[in-house]
Length: 279
Image (cartoon, rainbow, N blue to C red; front, side):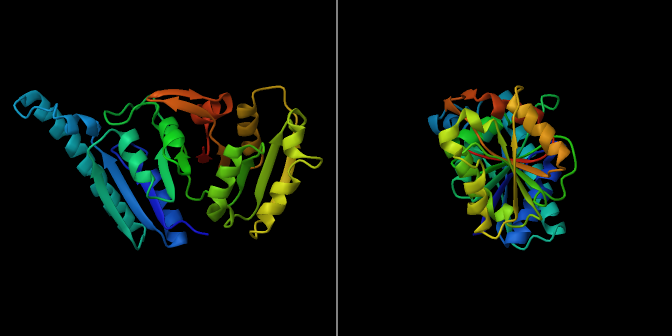
């Protein structure tokens, strides 16, 4: 089981190069095709409805500005992909806002690499709820790269947040190509007595056996906490020197209104290492 198509969102933000580096490293290891996609930031539905008037010079100037930003982003992606030694790659521009454009292309990819929202660096083409939207709507595993830090490797010491839920099961299965590269995978279970039917008599035993059959070296730890599990998970990842967190993304969406579970929200806001989420 490997990834064959990796999609990375590229733009003119200061962290685009780091996202490209992470995505390129994954693509090279799996001999996968890497796609770098930039978006103009204008919803495709505006184009489809014919609501853009070419006779408005101010609108034309703004659209040209957005297009030029996207063109610079894909040119930078092409330069980086070549320099990083990616054998198979392509770039494209989507006439859409980030959620719609990346979300649609994600359905034809095995893995999506995007960035954490940085509210100190707002973008004209990316809404603040972009990560949440992609997690909830793409149907694909999403690797979110924090807006600070250097992450040249993300697969040596992954940490799985395991609660035996459907979302966590999906995330672990989606992450197997990355987990198989790890020196050691840590599985953390918080407050298992709260869900005894899900975890059984030996919390973590079944998921450890499942992963070991894939040739993955696993250690399981059980933790009791009365504080926010999201912060407890981040603290544990620091103590274990983890380089990636794997977890389910919890919540539901209606149009652009995101209702996200507390642990998911905490991680998306405060992550310090890349996080792979599936819903």
